[in-house]
Image (cartoon, rainbow, N blue to C red; front, side, top):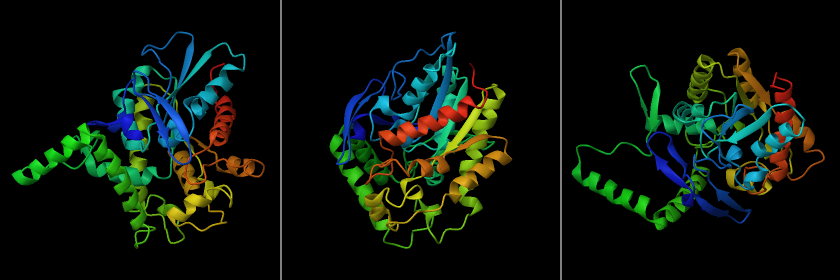
Length: 345
């Protein structure tokens, strides 16, 4: 389970445990995790970049981390192989810095505190539609300086300062959280149950409660829903621009946006209609924002739809994530697009 290789963090909210080794098994997949000394699901890298290498730093959530596939099957590693098989003079290092449930707020903090120390030549942010929901939640836990710049994301709301009894209860809870596996085992299941009952209430279509609200028929784009994520993306853009580091953002579809036969079991849990192809308009909204703000953007939705005509499955049926074939397809799209965008030869 994830609590074998994920730990709380006072800056990033949570992170992968350096040097952890674990088996991540569910009813849908059985994978292995070997976290390197930098806390990344990847091989070891030196902090200093080799003179012969071009580094691409991938940031994103569980799609980038590669839930459901082995590390060697993640799109970062597949892309690295494709780039190095071209006969180019430079050697490419595609570093997988994806962490499940990350979004532009913790990604900004990761880049600021650790990622940029790797001296990347390019940073690629793989934006998931659920990032909008996650950024709303993380902002509630975040600390900011006087200018509104994020300093860190707490793991939970600040402890009450004027109630000794509540402080004691929180301290007991924290002890079990950090010292026992039983707490995490139970919490994972309670969280899953809570997600389920939310779908039976009127929370559907409300991005504060429903991470896939933008795909609901009753959803209308609201500035406050997307403004936080856009704010953090612009912080990343400006930070990288100051350092002369090219920045690219990608968007990708979910299975129900690719084919009416993908993600059928998962649709039942999330209250999506079976045998229905959902709109890719939300990704187009992101693409429009990026072009307006001068951010290089790769929208992979149409490529996935085209590939789905002949490839199946690209997604795990009861899980939102890609199969190894989906990971490989995303890598092939990035290979084509990045090669066309002045990649070093």
